[in-house]
Length: 166
Ligand SMILES: [Zn+2]
Image (cartoon, rainbow, N blue to C red; front, side, top):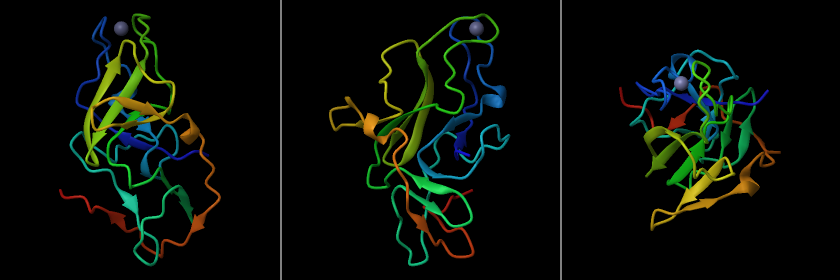
């Protein structure tokens, strides 16, 4: 069962008819510590939150690793500027009016979820792209379904970094 994180923008309207594109605006993606099954009704992020990574027993943040007991760090915390496509349902069509578009994606800058938007076109084929210093996107198709053979001991309690401020 793949693990997802969910960000919940306040509005994510169809560009054509303005109805909501995903139930409760729950946009599923895979970057950072992911532990939610597909279809979860819970958002672990709002726009403006920092992407969290889970620490192992020693306090390191292992990249591309699952944790014993479930969940995994999908991606590499070394990369703080990434462009991530919605990949839970791969929504490309409005169920109300039938309008099609390229997809939904979020922009993460300095580790913070900067925005979640609907893109009419121009989306990279890869789920993850690195945002270069000049703002251009470097698609990383080799990161799609990246092998994650590591099963890490994260200790008894989840330690997520950075810790979320409420
Ligand atoms: Zn529509």
